[in-house]
Length: 249
Image 1 (cartoon, rainbow, N blue to C red):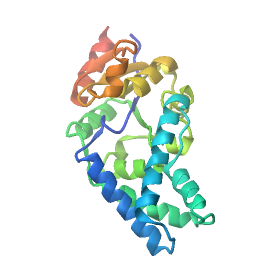
Image 2: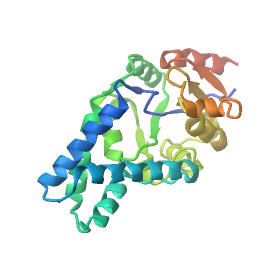
Image 3: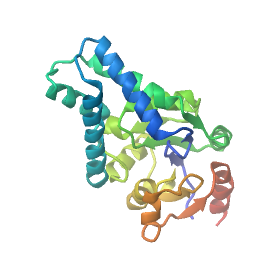
Image 4: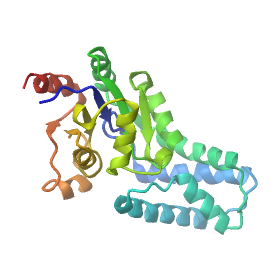
């Protein structure tokens, strides 16, 4: 078993978890976004505009799961506004509207209690650490990392929104490995999603570690017989012991 230079983590449901009601959060987040757009002088009808906004997001979310191309939330909002007759909206209005929207959901994300202690121990042991997160907004990812007080542990924090490609696309793993100056055989990917984290790592030639604490979701159950991780842990706190055992094999 090779020793590892670098460890790459997923973010949502791996290092942090959502502690809220998604439908309620979406509803409030949409209200805040439209409220900002109206303050900025854009005439949008709340109910119809938001119904179409969520429909387009759902359509893009379906497409990106098969194409592995990231359609950002900003792209979705800007294209919808253009169809509503607002085709020259300043970038700062788009950014601020999405900040208002994401602020609602950000309040419901919490760091796993074993995240910081585990990351601290891994850094002390000499591992280089990174994050790859599938997400529609890079600023949201960066804010979530900061609010969880995890940034200091990582050399790189990559999002699909910033790169335009999603896990399991091999290129996003290549970019991370290049930044961490290591080879696939000397890196491990740690995440909760079989179809993104584990499949992506396996295809990239990395060691894959599945964290199952929050992994009992339909998407994972659909892949449970076809996508196999190299190792399984229930929680992050088990990772240092696993790595020690692997080093001894």
